[in-house]
Image (cartoon, rainbow, N blue to C red; front, side):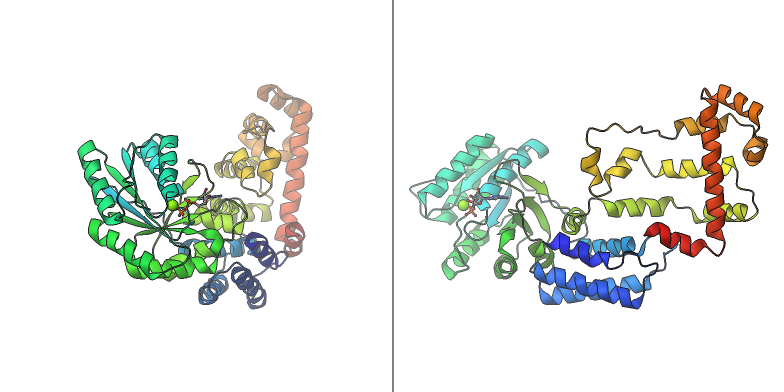
Length: 437
Ligand code: GDP
Ligand code: MG
C-alpha cells in the first residue's frame, strides 16, 4: 500500500549523513512512484515531487535532524498543503441551514446523511431534519427512515410524490414549521454520471439554493473518484467533498488528487458503516495516515522547537575547555523534559505506541538524578572531580538516595563528558554516523 511504499522510499536516505542531490533525486523518484501506484494523478504527482525536491535541496538543517526525518517532514508538509492545509467546517448560519447531498449511487450519501445529522445533533446541539429525495426506489426511503430511527432524528418523506424538487421544498417548509435548524437532503444517484441524474440534482440545487452542497465519493474508486468529482463540480460548484469508506485497506490517492483537481476542501471522512463512523477531515492527519508513521513529524518539530542553538554552542565551548559540569547536565535534562512528557514522546514513535500499552512509565524519570544534583554545592557541580567519599555520603543523605546511586550518576556523567569530547574532536563525524546507523 501507499504507506509502505512511501516508507520504503524515504528509507533511501537512512544512513546518509547528508542530503545530496543524488539521494534526494533517488528518494523523490520513489515517492513519485508510490503516489502513482496509489492512483494519484500523474501531473499532480510530478508537481508534488518537484516541490519536495526543491525544498529538500534548499534546506540546511543537518545539525539537528536526520536527513530521512527532514525528508519525511518535507513530504508531510507538502502532502498536507496539497490536501488543503487547514480543515474547514460547514456553513450552519442559515435558518434553517440546508445541506444538499450529491454523488453516485453507492457512494454513501444516505449513510453519510445520517452520520452528519447525528454529528450535528450530538456535537453541535443542532436539531436536524432528514429529507428523502431518492424517489426511484422505495427501499431508499425505507433506508433513510431506518437511519433516522437509529439516531433519533426525524425523517421527512412523501411516497406519493415523484418530484424530488417538490419534496425538497416541502421538507424545508416542514423544518421551518417544526423548528428544525438544519435540513439534510438525501438524493438519488446513478452508477455512473448520466444526463438524467445530473439534470435532477441540478434542478434541486437551483430550486432550494442550499447553504452547503456536499459531494460524497467512495474513496475506494481511485482515479474514477477524481473524474466524478470534476463532473459534479462543473455542474454544481459544490462546497465540499465527503470521502467515504476510508476504513478498510483504502488507497489514499483520491484524497490527494481531488483537492487539487476541483480545488474544494474535503470536509468529512466516513470510516465505517456505523452512524458514529464520521470524522472531521484534517489534512495533516490524513498526511500522517498516508505516510503511516504515527506522529513522527510532530516529534521532529518539537525537537526542533526546543533545540536551543545558543545553548548548544555554549555547552560545546565548555566541553572544549573541560568546563562541562553538573549544572550543564541539569540544563540538558531540563531541555529533554521541556520536549514533553515521556509517555507522550514515546507514543509518537511508530510501533512504540502498541508496545507501551499497559506499561507504566515513570513520567518523571529524572527525578532522582535531579535530587542528587540539587544536593551538590555549586562548587561541586562545576568541579565534579572534587566529589570524594565523604561528600558523596553527604549528597546521598541530602537527596534521600543511596551512595550507590550517586556513584552511578557520577560514572554516567563521566562517560557522557568523555563522549562529548570525542564528538567535538576529529572523531565527531564518525561517531555521529555510528550513532545514526
Ligand atoms: P448511497 O447510494 O450514496 O445512498 O449510498 P449508501 O449510503 O446506501 O451506502 C452504500 C453502501 O456503502 C452501504 O452498504 C453502506 O453501509 C456502505 N457505506 C457507506 N459509508 C461507508 C463507510 O464510510 N465505510 C464503509 N465500510 N461502508 C460504508
Ligand atoms: Mg441512498
